[in-house]
Image 1 (cartoon, rainbow over the protein chains, first blue to last red):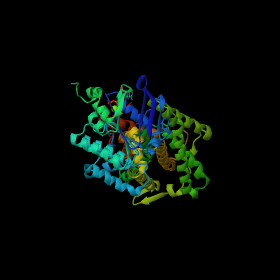
Image 2 (image 1 turned 90 degrees about the vertical axis):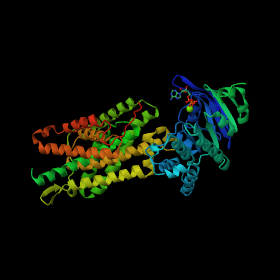
Image 3 (image 1 turned 90 degrees about the horizontal axis):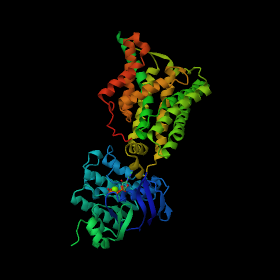
Image 4 (image 1 turned 60 degrees about the vertical axis):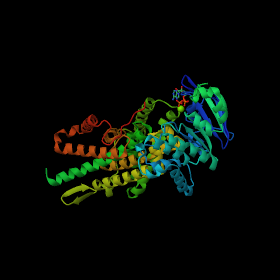
Amino acid sequence: MLEIKDLVVKYGGITALNGISMKVEEGRIITLVGANGAGKSTTLRSITGLVSPVSGSITYDGRELIGLNTKDIVKMGITLVPEGRHVFADMTVDENLMIGAYLRKDKENFRKDIDFVHEMFPILKERSKQLSGTLSGGEQQMLAVGRALMSKPKVLMMDEPSLGLAPLVVKDIFRIIQKVNEEQNMTVLLIEQNANAALKIADYGYVMETGNIGLEGSGEELLSNERVKELYLGKSKE
Amino acid sequence: MAWSDLLQQLCNGLLLGSLFALVAVGYTMVYGILRLINFAHCDIFMMGMYFAFFFVAKDFRLWPLSFIAVIAATAVLGVGLEKVAYSTLRRQNAPKISMLISAIGASYFLENLATVIFTAKPKTFPQIPFFVDMMQIGSVRLQRLAVAVPIITVIFVCILLFLINKTKSGMAMRAISKDLDTAKLMGINVNGTISFTFAIGSAIAAVGAILWGLKYPQISPLVGVMPGLKCFIAAVIGGIGNVKGAVIGGLLLGFIEVMAVAFFPEISAYKDIFSFVLLIIILLFRPNGLIGEKIAEKV
Ligand SMILES: Nc1ncnc2c1ncn2[C@@H]1O[C@H](COP(=O)(O)OP(=O)(O)OP(=O)(O)O)[C@@H](O)[C@H]1O
Ligand SMILES: [Mg+2]
């Protein structure tokens, strides 16, 4: 289980997280919704050690993550699909998938996992020798998700994976999230602008408001919450 | 100019260009991964020459073993430099300018250290007959070095390109140079990979140092400064960050310097300016170097 307690993060003088707490239980899909600048990305970047919090704690199976190197956190099975894709543009699609499996030692299963990713995103198979920088934005997003899956994570964190994708592909991504969650018991921590879709598949959700957790509850609870409806689902009160 | 003279000069150009290439790749590799101009690289090169002076002078016949020892010692020195002068700053997220100043400081430190240990009096590099004997090809009389250096350079450049493009460590190097945070997220050991880059760049500089010493057998603590400057220019001309570019830049610079002196012997005293003139001309037309990519510099 991943647990965050009273996490405070500052960028220079700006407070990005103002003492948030949350729990991500094993095998669940948890979603994080909230307005722009609420601190969602900062939360995930803190978990992976890319930003250093001022105070608070982040534990995974009881082990403190704050202070660890990113590579050691990744080694524990926590992976992040960063906001804005960040595929390695001058590497081929295949190389990007290979680098996703950088830490893995089990060569035998490597082929199987590439096949799994190809099955999920057939376009990546067609384009396997193409330089990733020349893929379309949506294809790059699929590659970023595929690359993360190649590391066989225990906890898969995704920062707005559906950004800039066509509705049909968004549906694909959500289907894949549910599939890996069910079949591989992968824990998923998901940031989404599309709060409606995210809350529908989530077991539990957190609503962030400028550095704080404003609301939390099961997916259904939040979906039917008036305030959430008004602010994040684009539905006004009748 | 007679045909055989021209051939002779072409060989000299290739020889000098290969030497430049071997040192230029070190500048380009460090720049690629840290976005830092490693000013101390030319002093690593100089130390490599002194290592060679001491290791080889013991016994000529053991030169292959000595060379391996020189390469290893220089690589260790390069890694040590990174740990002391750069790594400590990097861990504290020091700004780029601090790193640059540290690089300049490290350069002065090594030059002065060499003066203290080896004195400023020039030493004569051991002349290994296998490399410096003359040989006759048709009407051209050459030092064996003229053939050996390009071959050795090609071998090392091929090994380096293989390393960068086909191995896991090379993949890690490329990933870090493009996108540090994402490379970390892939689980790449950033500090280890940076050390590895310094080791490789310094090892290849050591190869260059040995061959340079055989060709120009006078060594002193400042012997690295002018070659270092030219090799840095070679890296910039080729497109800094790009290994192939550094090799091309080095060869180009070597040829131009040799040819300019051959055709205009009266200006041979000013031969060092050609590199700078070429640098200015190329940067005017291709600001990113001959095969450099456009780098959106984040400062
Ligand atoms: N590197 C940084 N330097 C300074 N301020 C930053 C930095 N990164 C984020 N911030 C600030 O921290 C706050 C939270 O940012 P964060 O990226 O976590 O928001 P977010 O919830 O992911 O927003 P979005 O939905 O737009 O992606 C914002 O006010 C942002 O301006
Ligand atoms: Mg964000």
